[in-house]
Image 1 (cartoon, rainbow, N blue to C red):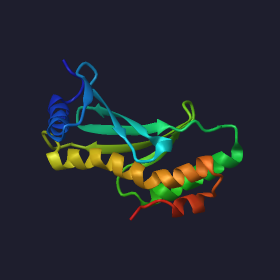
Image 2: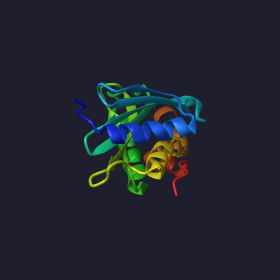
Image 3: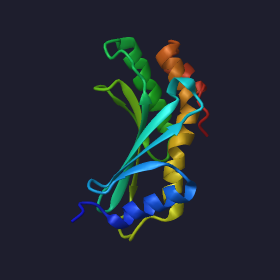
Image 4: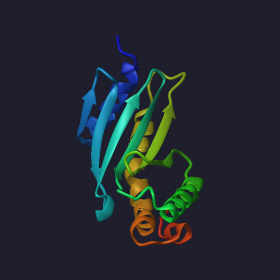
Length: 160
């Protein structure tokens, strides 16, 4: 018996199929793996994993960032930058994986009380991955690679 909602899993894969998005489903674990191309050459490939649970799903999307965790100034600027970005987001947030030197975007959708999420909700959650990475990448690159302050990097983002 599945430890996740098969209805939510199928609703997500239906939307991915309808949109022509390639993915790798793992019906044993309730996970779905995707990859997207991003416009920014620094963060060109986004790897996403969707975890389906009994009443929810979560998306984690990241790109190899390879930052020096021991650089205290960089870490201060990076965390300040991500706090500024997260303050403007309505859904989800950007987080740091110190173990893998990566920045990820997380999105959670609670489906409690629903048999499955609407196709629009699934489509919007998947589209938000690409849109947010596209909008945040210039500022993230500036902070990680060009030594910009968090404030300067944030000004390069296209968040509304």
